[in-house]
Image (cartoon, rainbow, N blue to C red; front, side, top):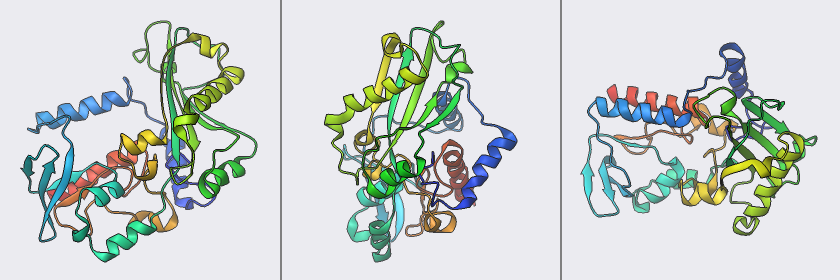
Length: 303
């Protein structure tokens, strides 16, 4: 479910994730995901790489079916022996490569891809600690009619009445992640991607209050009175800010025909010297899998 699939029709091979977690645990980086990013940036620069921030890509330059570099929206061109794109793979093919260069099978594939669900994500911090809460670092909170929740999200693409939540409380484990005497959280609420006709501009405030009210009533007493920092995003953020096609939070859905060999591969099948990393390519969504896609790309380039 938290890699973008409906557990009632996702291939059972993904059950291996649960077995891995039972065997080796769920690993947490002190300082949060941001600490992983900082460490990777530091390593990249130590290896001689240069990072350019706030650079918007206009297109991936293709010549004779080979990636030759990129052009930025400011008109500057950066030539390269290899191009690695960490943007959403569907968005990249649709927006960074001229349509006339896409082979017909590629266009057919793009028109038939199934995409994952989306999320409403609420980040919040409290001015008190909830040490006596029954919550843990990782919490999966589901209602009674789990099957209907999945149908509403994946088939009917409507906003479910019941909530399907994952609540992350890293301050239970990491003393560095929040100021002394405070707790920090984020909660993911499962919702349809933008194929669902939901007006998030109008519904956002109401929906965020519903989620926080539910947590206050069941897990975190007087939550809303104790919140000192809050930030929320909807599927529109995934689409407009993160360039995730249809606002799909986990990119391409992990179905039988969109897994393994049938999933977009790290090395482009259509253009030489072009590689993709991220949730939309093999091996899939989730931080470990996304990091693995980077390792696969590095190994493929080295070969």
